[in-house]
Length: 302
Length: 314
Image (tube, rainbow over all chains, first blue to last red):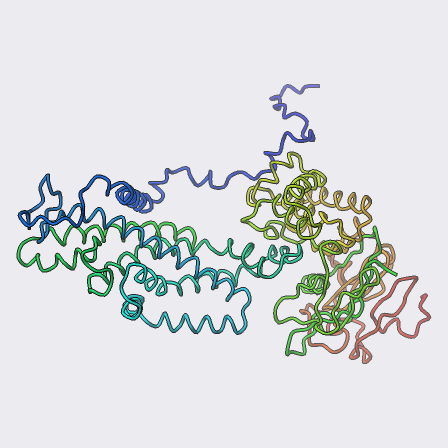
């Protein structure tokens, strides 16, 4: 019997099994928010990601296309930027562009490695500290207090001075300086997360305490740590370059931005600005890229 | 011998005189749904957590026994409760937060099976999908691959129920399983629980503040206030012939016609006597003592001195 109104669409038998599972799936909330394109919502993130993307391409492929960063050419010292030597040459006649490109591979790798190791180790300690609490937590917290009492840079400097300044040692020293940030951050998240019902559920299911801590609580506590990792990668590049600049980190003649700035700094007074400016600019841009990414991600997660 | 028997369960705050549950007891028989009803803060959830051995930090089990099929679950040395998902399990109030947000629904169920039924991962995965279909989820395979945030609340609760029942436990504790859901989903979940109880003979402890849900679901009822059992009996006894002043007050509150002599006060967990004493219109000197459970009918008891000295039938 029709009443003449609009005919409702035929949705089929709602109880037919196996066909309408989509209706049980909640609408994608992310779909609503993405009405604006990503570059409008998060311009800094996009800028940072583009810069980082360029750096990664340069770090991976760049060294294949430029010359040897260590080849000296005494006849061609202190040449200004030109088509042959995009960033000019330094006092030994080495191509600054080739060195900067090789340094990109080293510095970007080191920055990401430090952030990765600091996050893995820091989160693991943080989840144990936060989830199990007690005297372990007390000891870990006091240790992080001690480490955080030093500026990260000074701590890294002391450590490198103590264990020697090879590249792996620099990575270790800077990683140690940043681990406490991840411990604190993860621990704070874990304290909130461990009270949630799914943690009780995981215990009921028969998971042991370590499994609950690492497989259930930890993955749900990592959000802020990823943001922190992006920031730490940028800071680590600055720290590594800073150590090299002071002469306690990576040593010449390695092609590394901090080393290049240190070697090029005296040249500025004598007018050869390019030997320090280009690697310095690359440090700033890399650190900014990570900072942009971290800041914009953090707005959502933190 | 009852399937689940809880006796004299007493739970308190560490290093404090406050007792959150005082001598709470009830039984659950196979295939029976027993209600635990009370207002917010009455200790319903605390009771379920205590029975499951999930008391939060700073809360201790002071006394009591929990027996399952006659076997004592409370370790007398440590006061900890030993149970496995094969015997007793629980569904939670907030279905979404009761599932791990970073694990696929099917994986969470499969994991329970692996841990408790010694299943291989492939077998457990298939069984998990089977469980999801059994709790009335169409397209179970797809839901098994979904993360909890992709599922609706009612769907999450079904996943939770599938997870709880995966190991065919003897006792299921349902802590306000539908409070976070709307009424149509509530009806579906109730039907589902009823069906599963009929099918498997699982005993259910059904915890809620909703008297309507109790009336619909339960065979027997325990009324809790301030961590004290106020009254216990069959659904009919408690609903048609409430014998404790608090139970009367609770039913009146539904009608919004409460005894004006009942004062509006919060629960006082430090009280030595009857927990309802500071609000009760019939309070007298005896109420400064903790009242025992007086029989007021066949299997019907009330924790009130008004019934002391009677022969148990009036």
